[in-house]
Amino acid sequence: MEQGRQAVTLNWMSQQVSNEVKTEPGVSFVGFGNYFIEFPATYQAVYFIQDGRGVNPVPVPDLFTPVVKGPIRARSADGLEMLISISFQWRLKPEALKGLFTILGDNLYKDEFVRFARAAVVEACSFYTAEQYFTQRAVITAKMLEVMQANFNKPQDDLMLEITGLQLREVDLPDDFDDEIANTQEQMQEVEVGKAERQEQIIIKEAAIEVAMQKVEEIIKGAKGQAARVQIQNEATIKQLMLVQQRQAEANAAILQQFANDTLPFDRRNAHLFMRVGSSMRIVGMDDGCKKNLKAMHYVSLCHCCL
Image 1 (cartoon, rainbow, N blue to C red):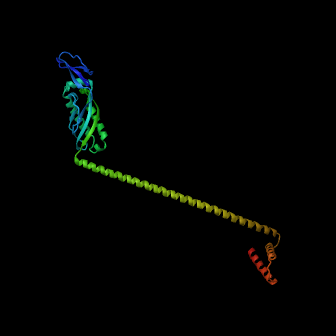
Image 2 (cartoon, rainbow, N blue to C red):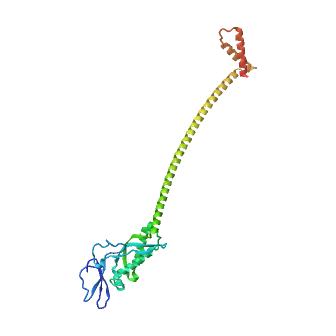
Image 3 (cartoon, rainbow, N blue to C red):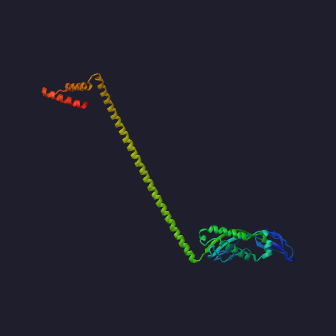
């Protein structure tokens, strides 16, 4: 047996296969008339694509030739018909060889695998709307792989395959729907541009508001400083005036204290003031009559001031 193969032994007399699976390459004795029923032991590929050129550039034995079929026709959850192009990789488990040969033989199983795969893809496609094939491609691919693995792993039916990878290659939708999707995507882009522009304007306005608030705070701080300065100046002026008035009151009180025992203290004080004024006057070129009149005027003035 060559490398990359696994086999079960067919008894020519009973036409029954043995339970033992041969996996090691090399020469083996199987008995007179008996022979190996070989299956691939490596991963094989199945393609559902429109153009199969380039899939198998190097000739290989028929046992390892990949299966190439056309795209799968399916419907979305909203009933839209579409063509799905996929590929996946599979490998037979050794314990499944006997049951597989008993049911499908050694040359029909690949055709049945194609049928199982189509059923899995059609089932998976029915879970999603046509629009989601543009927006949730990875999710749909994962769902297809999940359904495919479930369809090819049924030990109760002697069907056990390993499905390790699935690629969603192309989704062909009707042209009218493609045009509408393209138009929708364009409008969505315009909406996103509008949102970005609105956000930009919001940022600009917020910055302007922040600048205005800072200016208001500066004005308030300046006004508070000016008010504090005026208040300090007013308090200083008031304090100074009160001090002057207090000193004047104390001086007047001291003067009145000197004449407190007189019967006419105010007249005595006025006369004293008049005498001080008269003695302090030194008028040049003025006769005695003028001086008397001037003293009388000063006396009257002092009396009015003291009353």
